[in-house]
Image (tube, rainbow, N blue to C red; front, top):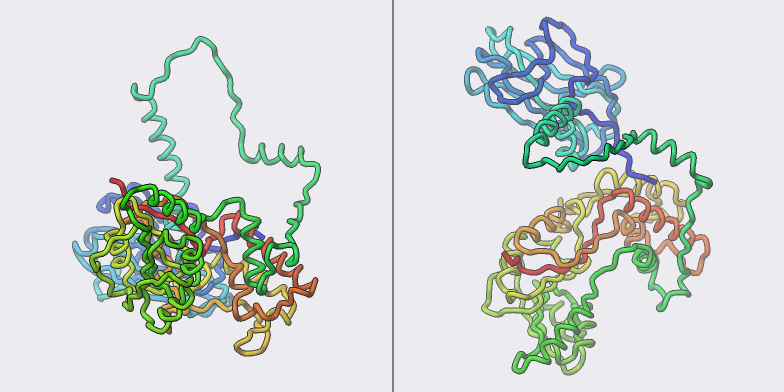
Length: 505
């Protein structure tokens, strides 16, 4: 399975479009007062344009449009956007007013959510209407227009007018590299290098291939692992970890190394560790058992009950400091730490900027922040559109017994892709976590995985699998292979394990 984008629309001068009531002598024009050195698509009041590509609308798709007055005497017009289904019925998506006079000279950006029309096959239709009786000759220039998944919008907008931009790019660099600063000393030999096309290379590769089959991954069976998996989720993710070539940070090993280093420093004391959103602190208790007196622990969580449970999980003789606090309201309380860690907790936090600033401020200069198993996918614990298409195709191919949802007791026809942040703080800002970490910290080691595997074997479906059943094991192997193939084809990993330090500049 590979990442295949759905049909989308990007405005370019070769876009196929049909205009009704055509009255303009030219349709593609550069609009000088915008300062944009490429053509725009121009419509006059009363004209309707229908764009040729047939679009299949998926949840989260958007229409993004940028428009401007095409001349300086605009009296005021409306740009209307519709979807026209295959039977000719129209659904109005939205309206963009373009003001009269000088205020209309500044390009207007608008974006409309197409989720209400999820599943519809349609064409995009745009019209210009007068907003006042004397505006019957107004011209509106559409500078950018794109339809597609929300997360792909920057790439779609950047792909507009590809041929014009490419020609300008080549001309620009052809000129730039004539400058003396790029000059290369002349050589006596006149070497001739052949220039190939990708098509030529692909044909040559196909001709050389002797076997087009892809080897099947040999995954270990549950009994072949060091410790028997606790269930389908555990088993699938251990197979995934074994199959991925990259290596996750060894957090426990790092802690032990820090403890050994500090033990060699007279008067340094144990490694000071702060755990945020500690919960029952199972990882922390495991690390504490390994480090012993070499680490001193502070656990912070909103729930006093979970903190008390965490203290009971710690090895005998090691008593953590317990701090009951809402991480959204956290403030520097005067202590400094060698390590601040958070196990899968940041995706529940609203005030991420505040938390990242706090981490930066309480770390010593050479301290580290550990993000362990963090959910960094799409907000609300949803899958991105491309990942969901592949995951759902695999899910639909599962036997009904493996699609049974424990909540309703019936098989799901499609893999749910619900925005859990609508009702909870689950994944409330998960897609912003990595950019915000990068704003204040620098990555030392980052490991990402898991585009959709977790959704196939989460609590809703994990109990459907019997690890003593060969067929169930085979389906888990297929799910891991589908995940690996999609991950290697450019899918969005949703699980982060990272070591970060304070910026050194």
